[in-house]
Length: 249
Image (cartoon, helix red, strand yellow):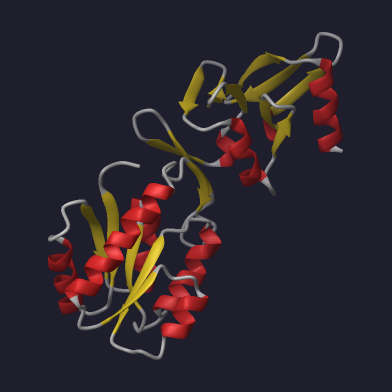
């Protein structure tokens, strides 16, 4: 994980947002990435900034914080949620929603400090820092996969991918014959995100996107893809070809 903990604040009250922003300045490892004043803008902000933690008000006009969390879960992205509210009544619901913590307004600085200390520990234990995830399955954003790279991360629609090839602890993602992205995640961790897509795991080394297949040649042991008006081939064993055919059937 990077040294900074990315955070966003979602609260319909401008004074509450300002107070929380000031309180977070006392924690040098917290990076405030943005604020939103309602649930819809909050979801957009979360999916744009991909924060580690969301300081989320419960009672807001339109969708409340619990409804925002329900919507966010559909996207596949799961930051830590710290509810902030002036009402005690939501505590049980917050726990059921698996919130990381629950702070009652006015925010107590010591309670906030304790919560952030626990957050640091949780993020350190999750040291992979979400190197691959599927998110965006909402009415506000199409589904995409986020992959960490050696210098940052990329966001890809599954249909953009032609095939993936294992490269030790990394994965080569081919968007075209000569356009490849090296991502810092093993191919096995990508597979669980592919359910319901045209991407199929073939053996231990490949993920093939069936929508880009033009021809499968068993004799010459190759798959020819067609994308953006151009064709190119991937040499692949007959064993893998048979596995792919079984999945396509």
